[in-house]
Amino acid sequence: MAEPKTLWVLAGGGSLGAVQVGMLKALVDAGVACHGVVGASVGALNGAWFATRPDAAGIADLARIWCGLRREDVFPLSLSGVLRCWLSGTAAVSSPKGLHRLIRQELPLSDLERARLPLTVIATDLLDGSEVHLERGAAEPALLASTAIPGVFPPVCHERRWLVDGGIASNTPIAAAVAQHAERILVLPTGMSCALQTPPRGVIGEALLAGQWILRLAIKIALNVLTPFVVANLGLLSRQEHY
Image (cartoon, rainbow, N blue to C red):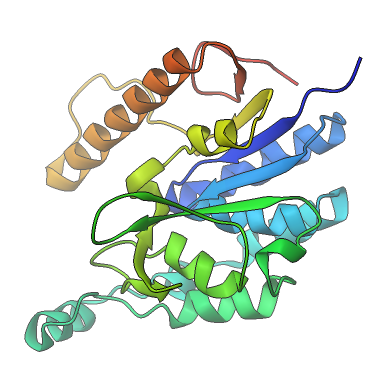
């Protein structure tokens, strides 16, 4: 019997994307098949690396990169930057130069189609909100677009479209994997908040928690729609396969 076409979907989630490194290692160590990678936001970064170096050595190097990162390396948010944005009327409070440098120095991939595994990077069209699938062309602008958090990083003009963070249109892009005729889909999430006994403190905490529940609901809806498919989600929803 032929092995089912299996795609790995890497969700967005900012710095929580570090947990995906351990998931990748567990799957590779267990010999789980991967016939393609789909990623949004930080999941696109991790996914691009894995699709380029889909082996234990590649994952070890990805872990090294994550362990050496500091917030200011990729997210240089400061009060002066916020004030400068407000006074100048620019579209972002941070510069993407750090992320740009990280991608250029660490990712051994020039064009998306040159990855060893088929790779789909998810971005969002800023003007109409549609989900954009990037599978060919320069890897650097595609990844910068997929991680361009609105208001934090400026939108990226790529292939005549203004693109922003892929997590807006689809933080867990299961539909993109289905569109590629996947027979089995493995979702690598970035985690959810633990059960809370009291409400979170502050506006930001409440907003983040609400956003997580919205994302969880969206994933559940996607799973209910995709009943013909076997969807394995690592560590998030009730329909799980453990490796």
